Image (cartoon, rainbow, N blue to C red):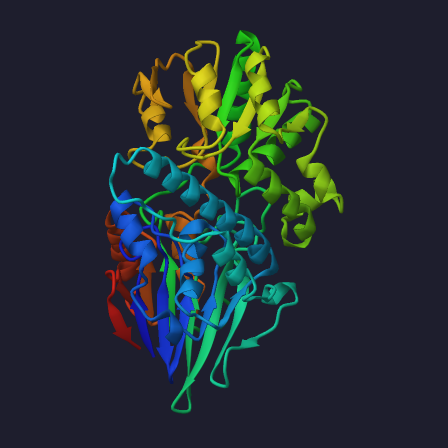
Length: 467
Ligand SMILES: [Zn+2]
């Protein structure tokens, strides 16, 4: 069996790992590379392998950096199946359509301002997304009633709950070669025990020789989650006292639902005043509607609080979903205190920009950062207290208080990752992917010391290994 790492190798985006065995080419994830515009265009538009020769894809979850280049596969002649969980199929459709839409808007904007330069075109459009959706074949978690699935007579797999986002799966593959069975697991992205709503990641309980594992936070230990409730209460009290607005840039998938859920729990327990809460993210709204259908995949705390009425977790009296642009704009004229949760998560586009523009200059307001902010993004500038910031071509002084809520990371930390490795019996090879060297190297050192019997490596882009 040959594995080639075509993405998320010493990098946290563009996950693509190609497994070759007995004439079958199996792709684990097909994610968007996110980085500088020219690099991203090159890496996402042109696949480094012949799509026509790929037999099947196993998709771990619906984050864009794992599913975002699937439509490029179809454009280049891929004709196989894409295996994923039912929730991943539903969410990926929205994520990919949204990506096609953003690409179109970006190209239209660029071409209108290109000043005679060669016009650019989107990498894929909505019609390409529709073609890829037809290829989804959904399989549930093995513990949730899913079965071993045969890709051909020699390769079969099953899904474990990865506890990272709704639908996220880790994969265990059994591959027959020359009469011997080889076992390989791919973690996808791993969540954490404490993450609200979702169950904790399931351990791979079978003997497994090779593990391809994410290592985003290989050198970090997260703060305990319970602190988030106290911090959020405090932030809301400050806003209430100052009659200010809390502006929360949030990712449509995961962070938006977690915040709604936590605000709901605090409201039900009378721990916060019932301020108006506006959810102003059309994509987040669509994805939130998917959640109540998957209560069986949620943790016991969720089930105890909401029983079978999962929708009650995401709708309560003072919570309002903003649908139209006119409604969104009308929030400008409203007096605080209230909370607006809007996309995008790094304030690079979407409705959050209008809310920042209108509110960032007022000392009564709070900008609440709840997730990772990549270099050079508007969110990162706000986080680093850079002022003024440029929004839609105009400069705005940042006078609002900038606060953070970092506890909600959806990725396993060093302790979680070490436990994941420890729980796998018979492991011989560990490949660390979806990581930067500052995170991967310390983790690799620790893993080599703790598990001397395991060969640990950090593959480079395009590196192949035979196992
Ligand atoms: Zn992810």
